[in-house]
Length: 295
Image 1 (tube, rainbow, N blue to C red):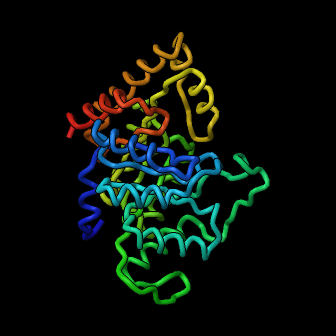
Image 2 (cartoon, one colour):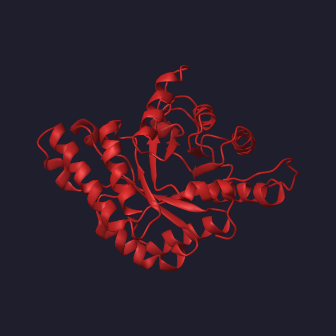
Image 3 (cartoon, helix red, strand yellow):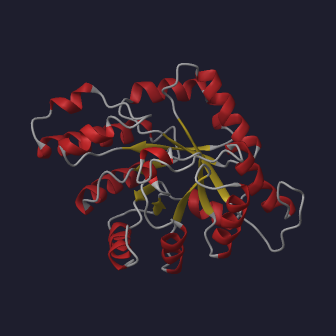
């Protein structure tokens, strides 16, 4: 990965990232209070999502900035398909100006499946273009048009990957291209089966020397929630989850499976990323304590 900045070092010393949904509100207090409580429960980094599932809500830039102002380590999601080319560049510069350095670059969920089905999905830049833009800003103070952008940039850019695709070599090739264009770390799609990810990591040995991996975990709080997220593209929930007889049993089963995955995979990865499916501070603390015990 080459030389790392102070921000990158601080981020990579963190092994437990908690994903959050920005509020559908102009009032940030409840959201900020939850994030502070989550940090108190052991979350080391707060991830702020960017219009997940095409749902209209506050842009992640404002809450991410507020978290930075509260001295909380932040990973801000940044989606490309809801922005045209100039908006991507403008928002990246604004993000950095507000002190947000850790960003997870995504293509994003199709906006047409969310609040406004008539929304456009924009393809001005590929995901590799967005990575390259952050790399150029960091290294040359230039944009993709070759224009000078003044100031100092130190983005720590990450991407996502899925170990479930049939063509593993194609997945590894895409990850390699992201690394070439400035990707420093990856977050997986949610993992429920440690055998699948272990097989993938075995095939990705050469790549692992060039990057860091965070494994995404899902802990369900209700059967209704399970049924909803099991239909989300890229989420493959094993049938054992559907055999739990009520919400309480499902939540405990989910926690048990998360703990098992953490204990098995911690020696191979840099950390874990708990999705926003749980807001239970007791569950967050349990997962945080298990992660902390492994590093």
